[in-house]
Amino acid sequence: MTALIIIAVALGLLIIFVLFVIGIYNALIRLRNQVNNAWSQIDVQLKRRHDLIPNLVETAKGYMKHERGTFEAITKARSQAMGAKSVSEASKAEGALGEALSKFMLVVENYPDLKANQNFLAVQEELTGTENKISFSRQSYNDQVLFFNNKIQMFPSNIIANMFNFTKRDFFEIEVAAEREVPKVSFT
Amino acid sequence: MTMWELIRVNKRNSVLLLVAMAICLILLGFIIGLGFFGPEGGFFGLIIATAIWLILTAVSFSGGDQILLAASRAKLVTHDVHPQLFNVVEEMKIAAALPAMPKIYIINDPAPNAFATGRKPETASVAVTAGLLARLNRDELQGVIAHEMSHILHRDILFVTLAGIMLGSIVLLSQVFLRGMFYSSMSGRGRRTSSGGKGGGQAQLVLMIIAIVAAILAPIMAYLLYFALSRRREYLADAGAARLTRYPEGLASALEKIANDRSPQLASVNKVTAPMYIANPFKKKKGMKLSDLTSTHPPISERIRILRNMTHGASFKDYSDSFSAVTKTKTVVPPTALTKEDIALRQAGAETGKKERLETQMRQVGDIMRRVNQFVFLTCLCGLKLKIPPNYKADKVKCPRCKRTLDLPKK
Image (cartoon, rainbow over all chains, first blue to last red; front, side, top):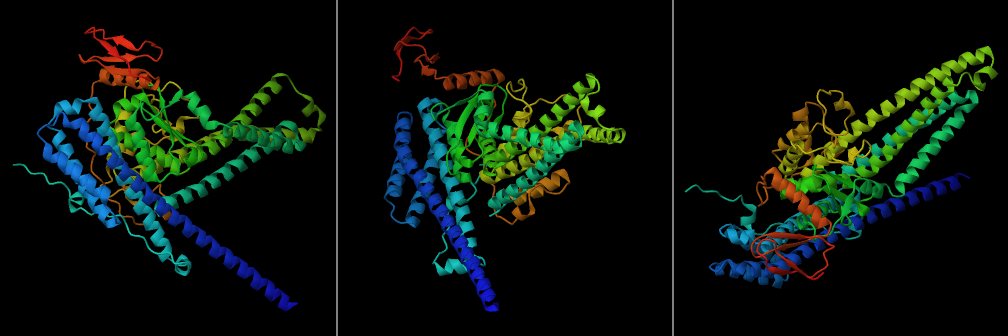
């Protein structure tokens, strides 16, 4: 009789333990999928940025005849970003492209005719939107990575994470130092 | 992470509140039953209360958000109608990691306001007025949309719907009872009192008085509870907006513009839909101090001051610190959501001030609505902007100023 009770209790505990492990395992999988999804969001927006640049250059060219250097810098940065193979290479190239674009936007300030052009305003809005989407998807990706990394390092989920080989993910950092710096203002 | 922690705490609080209100409703039904039908009537009252609740739930769940959108005369729009609005919503959708893009509606109204609806994040909608679009710059619009996204993310709409149903049931039940009492006392003594003995009549009278008091007090208590929680949710959505955009100033200056607006009150709004909006759609009457208790929204000046006081970062912790410093009370953010997060503020976007005169803004309101209604816009070589209605069938149009003939774009 007592043996039967002991077996029943042991069986019950085992079932609870298995359910517990399954729960944590599923949570880890869900988090990892969220991280992957956030990463693909960044990718989508970067592609969109590449697609918009020819449009932007085409619209602005007629107005900005004396700014060939700026256009060349953008086109070059774009083709480098599109040709990037690894993640670190990509983030470096995208950083350079972002820099070239913000320089271009500064130059645009000198061309009031261009700033009043409806087509240019439309492209500019799309570009601003895409730049924001890139930074927000990076923000959301880093949030998800933080959450995921916390989960696989904290007890008790770390045991299950180790059992099934869940590994820490890297944050998507900005590679270009200039983008991190606060713009300097000089009064000369 | 704190955002998910907050959602979890919100869910728990909603369940607690709903259970409390449900108990309140059942008790009210029981007491009213006792008071109206005599000692055996308690269960009858209970059944009536439950029936009212079930019917209201069925109605609002079978298309509550559609009713709301239709009632506010909102129109579904695509990317082409207002690209900036569309982009800003998509930005915030990405930042909040929502599973699907919310539907976007524009309301034909010059009063600046916005609301979100949809009980699940998958089926959410965001509606803004044309007046809001005409007044706000990109950063401010982003702040407003982020506030609405936070409502969606925190499941506030589900909460407001459920709590609203409960509140509606309680109010309806007490109204029915009080009216019933009034008419039955008008038509003289009924069968109920004459059938009982003398002692039974006395007890019945006491029950009746208790029921009347309950029927008067219960809706008031439910209202106050509902409003207090609704105000709290507004603060939390502000905190969420600051966290999503990393730029509290955007929402602060949008709220300032909304508060200082002089255009007439939003046309299609009532007390039930009011908590959905970003700012209280009812214009303040002068010298009302009680309105602070019965308002669905916190005072707008206080919300602005809290947002402007966030100088160290954009996390929930920073909002909570700023909240305590401004209001001198303890925080609205659940303590479990207050882990340390290092979130830096960002700088203002490229587009700066949008300081246009009132007539220009009103013209923009008109333009936005024409675009919503599928007008075609055409700029003539002489600079005149032609606005062609959708029922204009010819493929050429003459410019009224310079008499050039212009081709209409093919549809």
